[in-house]
Image (tube, rainbow, N blue to C red; front, side, top):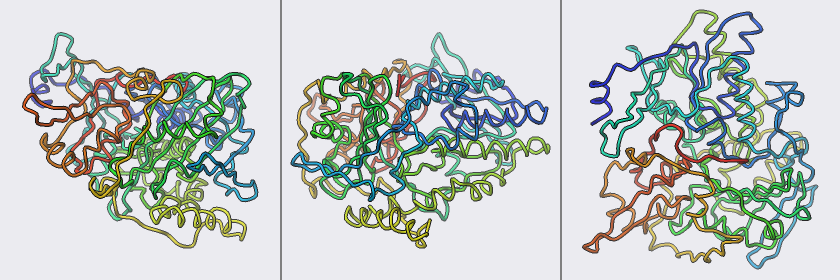
Length: 562
């Protein structure tokens, strides 16, 4: 049965009405909800707010480095330390390393390090733990938080304005038929709906297309971050040390680099980020991260330790030029759903919190004025007057310079992020542009050299399936696949024939594999239960034939301490 047939037979759906509906319980969504309730309390008004989170609990799907700039949380909760926010480990030292293929390492002198790589005053955090704490603060203020409920559909009124969202149906079998435990989704209706789903949000992508929010803007570009959490011997622990690397294993002009941060409690969080505009279809971001760990400069931090967890997530890195219009009739985009991440700093949580607060202030003013389902124009105006706009203006060209090669990228990063500020010029007087989307960048496999990756040793380096296991990923098996194909013939006829099946390599969770049929022909097998919701396939598929849709709420990874 189609979703419409199910609704016709079992509907209508029950509905609940709120002043503001928030889709996504990450740092941005929680900050929006908290700020709304703070403003209502200060004004002595009642305001109903709900947060829908598809993970099993707030923070379960949150994945980030992370070194957190406290500038936004200082504004949201000036007393966050007294409240027990889990920002426990201040940054104690910064290192910028250039790794050589021969195992050598060059350290950038402190006086040459651009401001964007200075982390004094920031905190090494497990962002999922911070988000869980923000959820507790939100609930204490009266926000209704619904974990395990995936917003699956945007609802519109008869004028075309967003009027809310519907959660996905539960208990639908693989055959599309309602099962014994079937439960129809519910409508959550709001005067305003805020989308805070993170990078490449499923519904955010739809509203951007419907309202043409990216018209006249640069193409958004993304990277994939592959991350692990380790516990190391006490004599290896250096709490507060922040390491960033460039160079090996990126041997061509692919944009990429590593990070390694020492948390408290003998924990080390580390990962590798690769721009999804890479050209060689033989590249595997997962395996690049694994071999990066074998470099002596990285290995030394991990020897004698144990891997605890694993995850992967797409991140925005298009900059200001790629930012879509963030408001539309009945709603707004915040955080990485819009693309506010600062790629030069590899930081987005402070931007998500800040844009959530700015959106909340605009929504509160509108609701108090008796408005609904119109555009919150005060939100983008407030952003343009904020410290966040100035920060992103300064780094607007960072990723774009690297599209011209590593030499140009490194040189111009030095000029824009190091030299110009010393000359009193805070933002580059020039602006770069790009209209090419990441999925358009792959070259034919025949034009590229295959990459031979070393086999994992199970101690320092690992395979995909053992990695997915420690991500605690789980989906109800008897449900329709949430990774769908517009045309089932395309993976073999185009992707395998021309690009050697890149989906089997760009996916960091072993979801896609090409297998043989009984007659010897090829077919694409989709192991949807492995999916860690990184959204890479939705971005990188060269034919844009793969469409990621929401699975049942509560499914996916359950990141712990990530």
